[in-house]
Length: 617
Image (cartoon, rainbow, N blue to C red):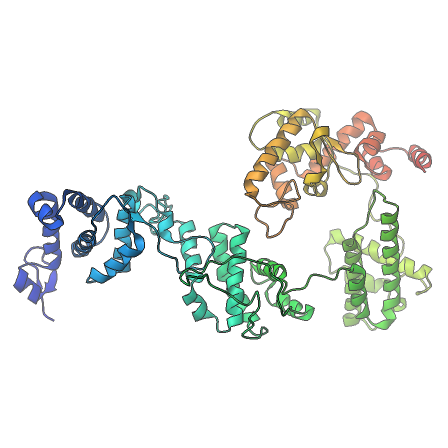
């Protein structure tokens, strides 16, 4: 093809076009578009009605905001007029499906981008009904047209605004905001085309469909959902090695709706005819493969548990621990079994007597896991056949692998274990000498009265700001609750009629009027954030996959934001103030500290301490 310079704009163009028309296509298009705007007779001749003429003028002004060349703008105007010529009544909204269908019939270029520009214009003029059935099987409608605003003509081509929702952008190099980019990513990853292209087995395809429904059900932010879908693809490739193909039972099956045009996915927990679950050995392999590599490992594991592909832990924790001990060499088993029986009897006794003090199986599990870990270290590094051959040198060498702060705790654990084994005559002597784990007194410099007054003023000032932070800080400062006790508060523990919160293992925390106000504001905000979901906890995590409380780090962040101290430092300051003002018995009777712990704050004499112990026993 030969090219010549256009006599008007001097740009290269087809020689045939210039010979026939006398100008390039762009110059011709500019001339026609200007004629629409300046020649009313020409406009009416082309549009056949004043309404269509007005729409045409608005469309041209809208297109001039874009970076499209004149020939592209003119082609969109031509296709727009072809579509409107088929419309008899403009009082009835046009079907989006019909508009798109007619566009691809009459247009010479058949550009999806041009079709979307026409639809955006019709949406701004309230002339179109969005009714195209999405190709995405995501359970929430996420097509870009559903994020359009009525002022879309103002921002659709603006370089500093999102082309979908109109949000202002921080970087002009982007066309969409992060949320709209995430929605587009979700859309692309939840289409039949994507599934067919990326997964071969039908069973894996069905599982992926239900995973998308599960993610939608969680109500996470679009950017989080997009990230989960992106990083979870490797999980399904991994599963494909273990899942048989053509499993026609839930959750490996997927049934589209009756029309077949829209696949609306709902997460339904059903009782399958054939139950398929992964073994604990598989779960161990899966965990080793992804736990510290993939950021969304816990999300996917929660999904597998929710649909029953990963069995729940053994209901009897004692049996689970027995299985662990069975894998230990015979010469090391008996003292550990003895420890398990002793701890089991302790738990049963505490439950039977309905005591305030309790012991959890998780505590026992951690203790036995630590001992088994020491046994494994001995097997790899020393030549011993039983606990009787263990020396203090071996214990010390093992403890050197841990941070300094945790060595005393593990040393005390091993000392107690060996001491119990010695008493039962499983070993001749305890390889660890008796030692003092920590000093009795708590040496923390008390806060001045001025700082206490500032803390008090901060907490009793009634405002509608930072009320969650104030409530947490008040529970720690005025009631000496630990971080664990704060995050463990359940809705059932709150007694509004008595203005108190029940705390397990200690007297209730009776709230002042200001604290009750903060509590009511927190409960109101909690209902709003949960958005229809339920939670047993007062300070619940709004983004967690399951019903769980906020983390201790969240409490640390909130308290430090308000007071400038960590929860631990704030609680110690409160206890020191109470001990100085009311004595150690106040800490013991009213706050629930043990006598030993109370003595650390109040520096009680040994005689007085013994008197209280004798009186209570």
